[in-house]
Length: 285
Image (cartoon, rainbow, N blue to C red; front, top):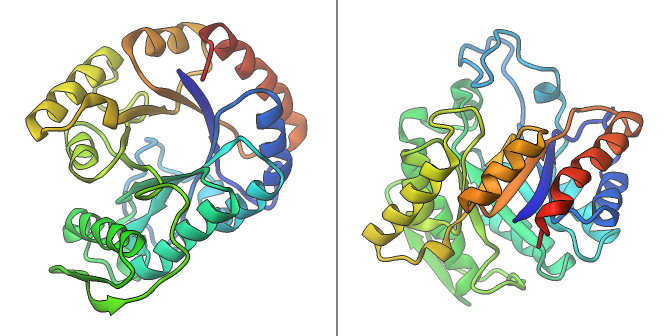
């Protein structure tokens, strides 16, 4: 089982390059960075975390693609993921370029974590109809796949439409970097199987039984004619407990992803040491 971490990169958090080096030194497999372009001053959408007050880090997040490009320059093995990129708020042609660029710079280490998001006001400011966001996410992913695969790519959908274009470079990973779709069961899993390469459930949200997650993944893949091995399960917000890590490993989960606080290196580096000790007995890949 693989082990990664996620953090909201901000001006006041540990520098992303220092974090990336520290993760690689400690044997972690991946770094996943959150994304929010902005938070509306009159936010009405409830935060899935459950509190009325939205944590400050949501307002202060740096751009994940720029941060991952910086991290790629100081590492050689660490995989670099968006966790998650809000593709319903992103132009697919520009995003396809960013994904390919980081995959080239990192020599094939990019993981494309995506989601539709929860902040309806935020997506509306990007011109996205919240009621149609899941269909839009699918079409934008399909459009990006076409761009990465073809010398002259075109896509014609209900919400995404463009005539033949030429965009280079192509990603190093073929046919494209792995696409990990976030979302609670059952919708998140079904979308992952339909057009992704992995599913990202969040520990503590929805049905939190990892054995059931694996079983439902296997059954959904069988219904869709895909092999279970084609859809990795990466658990976001894995508790910082040996018992939880062991339970996920025994259930057949592919990757645990620990959340890090938006703090300085003085707080984060000792925490990384502790988290590394939790995963060491599991012989992470």
